[in-house]
Image (cartoon, rainbow, N blue to C red; front, side, top):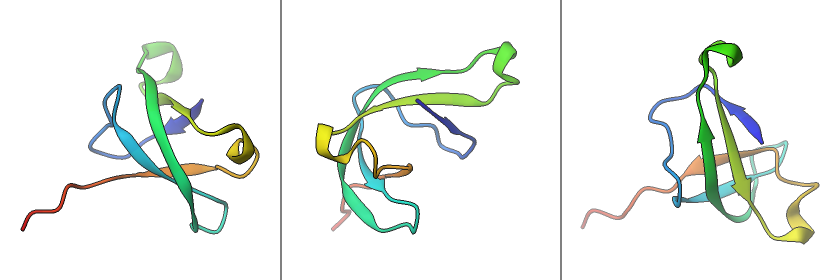
Length: 69
């Protein structure tokens, strides 16, 4: 689970590019859950599923954009 305060929010099932501390690509992840509650001060908390070997390296993610042409 990680906080996410950017727009647009990802949706459950989206594939994302996972990143390490330096912003380098680690691999791919899948959005499992998106939570937005008043208790969390309206900060989205995102659950991203990644391969077991990447768990300790992934610190953030970037939304993948489809190619348009």
